[in-house]
Length: 546
Ligand code: ADP
Ligand code: MG
Image: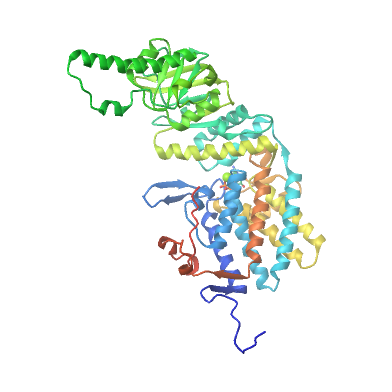
């Protein structure tokens, strides 16, 4: 082929190429680096990270997904590990840190095996066998939970232990169970129907669950009745005032009479708008735009609740919950567009306050009002609620949990080791490495709790000959039955963690050649993306923000 004695160039010289073992170690180092970032946060006694964004906002969290999401990680192999966290976050809402630690450890163990002469293909095969078997074992360990409110509560509490303030864990867990059960429909849970409202300035212990929806508005007239039974609700997505431009237009007015005429005309136009509402049979109006005070008092004198400048997302919630349809052209409003609820109730303090719509007729909607002294407190509670809601959803939908505190990982590791012996060959070393990687979860929980890791693991393994649910008591270091202690994780979290983690590890192990196009050849890369990252290499930035 090499006819003229000239070498054939098969790789564009403008591309940077890295090959073989070097690529693998580089990628493994990057994956391990990601795992090491979040490792210290794992478990109920994990530490927090302080994240500071470019404009100086501070978030203190120990939530793996939040940390990695805010770090804009750029190395391609590291990104694969971040994706494992994201996949857990979106599929189960929990278990992100564990999955990342597991993935990083799988790769670390693979590197040791490679150094000892095991070929990556053998490791890949062993990891795949182990992952399949591990899923089977996790499933065999699971206990039924779907309808059991006590277990749902325990799953919620386990997912937020060490996240929000301990003091409120029970309150938050209870609210989340109530909310999920309230919106459950034919075994499925759509969390869009759980509306989170925030009230900064209140007390966290007053955080509450409300059947129905809450709007941050009250009727424009102070004297309006606080309750309307069975309101018919009009949702208006248009201004209910005279157009501003009309006021600016030059008017040829010379006499007092003409001014009066003009005002009358304007009023007539305003009252006409209000009449459309009255004719449709509404007795409550939520307007997303401005509403002239005259319109409001005209309506309210006729017993119609009216409020203006309702946020777009609240309009959407109102539409979903009451079954009403927002109209853009007020003339089109008829009875058909109206929404319905059992009760409209105002909780007002002067011009401020909230309107509750209870027992709504549309999609089942419930709300959680988060209260707290400062924005940080409220945000932290919100993250905890977000996790707990999704964990309870998982358990309600799948109906299965496993013992937490490392109990299930220890058991799966033990059973995987005997499975490895039955497989034999070189793959068994990879299966054992996989088992070790799973044990890294209880090991890390122990380390983060300040316990001796070797003692803890030895204890747990010993206890497992008699109790498959023995996990770590993070305060005493003892091996205890986690089902009895009420420390449980959704089965889905464990299964997805094993699947996503092993797939990512395999993907990294399969790469033995990396070609990187030079930036000059990629005009869509902006200068800020050229920043040097891991290993001094640069890569196009992937914006990790959701
Ligand atoms: P992840 O992002 O993986 O969910 P967490 O920091 O939430 O990370 O830690 C989850 C781990 O902590 C799970 O293995 C869970 O079983 C364990 N865990 C939670 N609460 C307790 C507890 N009270 N005692 C022991 N382990 C616990
Ligand atoms: Mg968690």
